[in-house]
Amino acid sequence: MPSRRPRRAPAAPASTPIPTTPTPPAPAPAAQLSISDSTFRDGQQSREPYTVDQIVTLFGLLHRLGGPRGVIRRSEFLLFSRKDRQAAEQCLKLGLPFPRVCAWIRARQDDLDLVRDLGIQEVAVATPLSDSHFRYVRRGTRGEVVEEYLRIVDQALEWGLTPTCHLEDITRADFTGVVLPFVQQLVSRANEAGRPILVRLVDTAGVGLPWPEAAAPRGLPAMVAALRREAGLPAAGLEVHNHNDGGLVIANSVAAWLYGAGANVGTLLGIGERSANPPIERLLFWRLALLGDTHGVDFNVIAEIEAFYLRELQSLVPPHRLMGDEPLNLSPVSLTALYAAAERLREIG
Image (cartoon, rainbow, N blue to C red; front, side):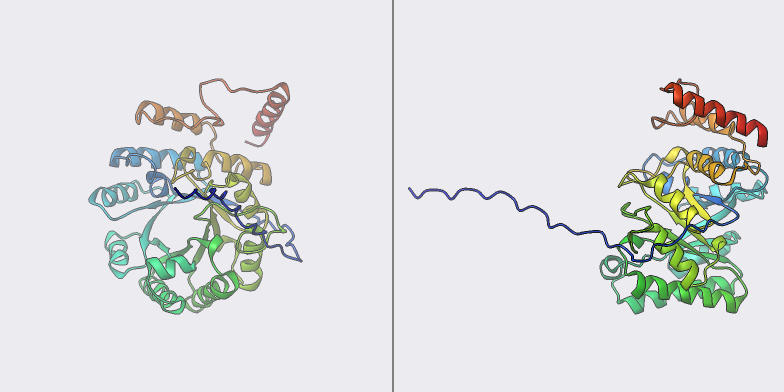
């Protein structure tokens, strides 16, 4: 009987160093920092869908949390089911100035038709820019797919809508060859139309990095700074949507603000796809730390939101949250910091 060959140990994965930039950008935070909500879009991709009444209630809580100055400036809605459209219509009927209702669609004409039919003025268009999406999802070349995206953007502008292009899978895209030229075309179209086109960097894979030395497409500071500088994109037109697969969701969001993005995207309690999104309540505290002003944010509403999830949704609230009825595990140093933050809130609130 022939002897068996000894089994080889699996080969170690090849080491792929993270590219670095020889000229790291300097911090350049915008004067105004805001938050966009994705609770009813990304937030529904990891749990049982909300009912229409639940969405309307949470939308009202988002309004109160963000305050009268609209720190939480808009909220995304799907339109693909009858229930989705009813929820968007009911929130529009509330007549609240903030957050504004924004429809999320694919880059398809029939999706855009739904937005116009419902009378929604802001539309978020999924425009993934990685070669994986070009080849396996859109099944076209880079140039062909980008032209499809631009046709939808042009139609939205023609109808008087405010489009946001969601540059999904940004941390696996060719930044200099695809991302930057695409954003430059968007800025040119916005200038010609006299209407804003917003850009959202979406770290779909959750592998973005917050350090300025990390080059694009992994480094959030490098990408944000380059789009501000080389594409002429204003801070108010640039927002970042992070995922927590790599455990850096808050670090990446804060870095995006520090290096020039005007907005970050979050969900209530951080509930979202896979490893979740930035919790809006944490983003609000970091915004306070960066600006030193609440701008009308009502932090007391966070406890009401948690109570609603526990009482009405029977939902498991993520651990290590910031506020609630249950006691937190705090060291004396942490307690001192918490008391100092409370004093600061009383002084400026």
